[in-house]
Image 1 (cartoon, one colour):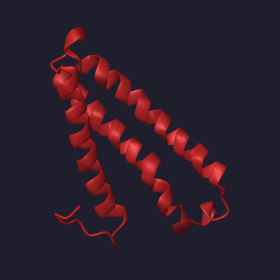
Image 2 (cartoon, one colour):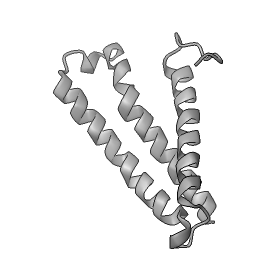
Image 3 (cartoon, rainbow, N blue to C red):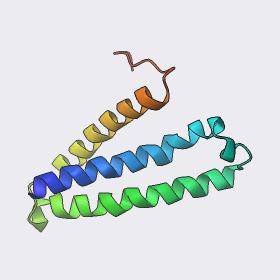
Length: 105
């Protein structure tokens, strides 16, 4: 069960991370955000990133083998990075249709 909780929380966390880091790049397409300054965009991104931490910290706590979880520190990090790349690929395909995914990336 800890494997499922850890992987689910990592997926949710990385979804929020990707939205916080790259979602604001689509703000220009939204009427409500056209007059926002840099500080407003940073504040919105930090607000979204808060949810990243709300899921990332428990994922690491539940998943780490010294806390009764199934993963070593290295396994947690590599798993998180793999999920991050997958989430980013899905995000870029769905929201940035002009981006082409190719092997040279």
